[in-house]
Length: 105
Ligand code: FES
Image (cartoon, rainbow, N blue to C red; front, side):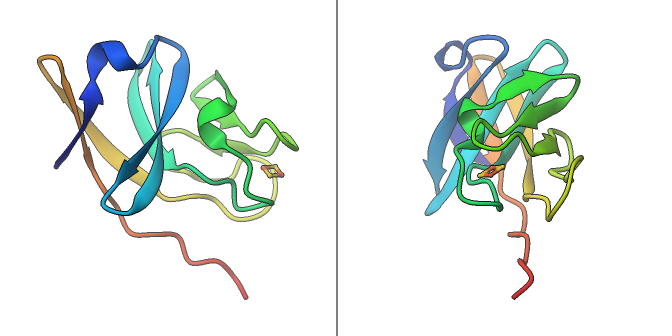
């Protein structure tokens, strides 16, 4: 796992974008735990870290496609995004990057 940030770096209920191993990751801190997704919406590149987090999902701020935080699965239409494992050890938030989601040509 790779160090991502400290717990206090992400306010509860919000997301932050990070660069980890050359990938842009959206890290979310929710009342139910921490989640990490690829940061770029597969629709037209919207910033998922700036999306609205509600009901275990994030809504893209550009055109409101929704993605499940735990899996990255699309809850509306189109492809999902890659989800990554997150672990909190004390004050440190660690992320294990998963495989990128392949987009249809
Ligand atoms: S860019 Fe995310 S829904 Fe369009």
